Length: 159
Image (cartoon, rainbow, N blue to C red):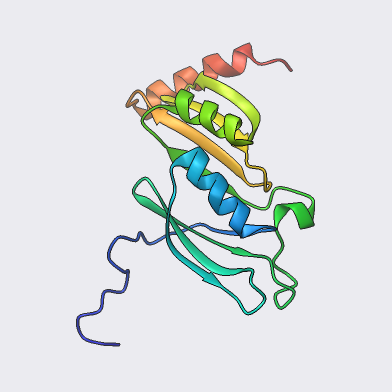
């Protein structure tokens, strides 16, 4: 390793989600429309499918690639037939982002609500089967306040 090379590249965090897609090109366009993603890198493989892409959403990075027969144990949610990953996204206005994502083709999983842990929160599934939990942080709560609110919330839930 060169002396001045950072172990974590500039502009990245130590954890980065990597989403396997059935159609990475369409997924990139969806993420641009729904979440304001910017493509930093898009590497097509010899077959023309996306071998690796690097997107910026807010201040974070999401990697993605098309599923590949060379890696048969790595499947997109559509091929696997289930949710294979979930991404948590903090935004300034959760209501607007969920509305925009649904308009772009996401399926609403959980309508936006104020939650006991201090976030306004909702969930969507993107058209490619990945679940996105989207939130705006509204309150800083102590663990005791959160426990009290959770207990109150649990009392309101149907058995």
